[in-house]
Length: 170
Length: 224
Image (cartoon, rainbow over all chains, first blue to last red):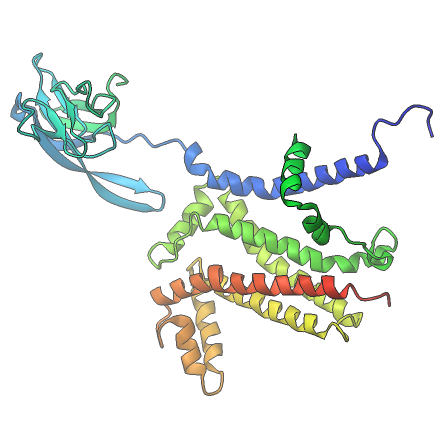
């Protein structure tokens, strides 16, 4: 035995070794399972392309109109057609605006002039959320952000819309 | 830090005797491979349990992706296998583990048999062990169908034909298992899924608890 005071006792050494080996085995077992479970969080979300929404540019007025169209959706092993909606109009600069109807408060669906008391605004019936015509939320109402904006493109006089992205990030 | 958390809880509800009862017991010399290497044969029961734990964990995680429905079962397994990171590994663990459990179970049974460790007063634990073996076979049989591929389908059809050979109640037994007298289909798959993930594991947990309580009560059998 050495004269020095032993830093680690035999019992401690065995404890550490056993805990280490056991921990290594448990980690080796659990790591693939946890990685598999968190896969949806780490997966790149596929960027959807643009879809022809069957609306000619000349038919777009300064009055917001609701349009619906279908997109192909791949959900894991399940592929389906889902419908999307937008409020489309030309603003004062003659630029096309396409807003998502999903309320930024809790995800209900907003309508243009959906309430008689609030003309010239988007209105959400769930908690009286309101937005100005440019999509900005009316201060003091529940929504905390402006309506999302669809990616858009005009090809051969037809409107093509893509994914809805938060206003300002486009 | 951990010690402090432990002390805080122990102060209040005195958990030390609980885990000591479970974990703190002497391992006799004749079952300790450090003394006699041949004592490794005593490990097979523990190894069976270890693999069962892997089966339970990997199975739990697999149900995050699997759907027990004839339209989607195969597709969800294929998706898990090809698109999900590590999905192949986790399904592989469950797939190979299912066979390893049976192998370990047999080795454990052989050890108990050839050492005569099942003799009085341990007959009851032998019976419980045999029941666990049957549960395991049931888990293997029901789990085999779940990927809903050709192999699974036709193997299950054969398995159900075997069940039908049981005298007098065979026809009813088959219908009970398959959910339909003649079709192996939508109802069969959901039934097998329910049996595989709820009914048999519940029975398995109960029997395993009995198995472990008995061995602790009676102690391990003496040296040869």
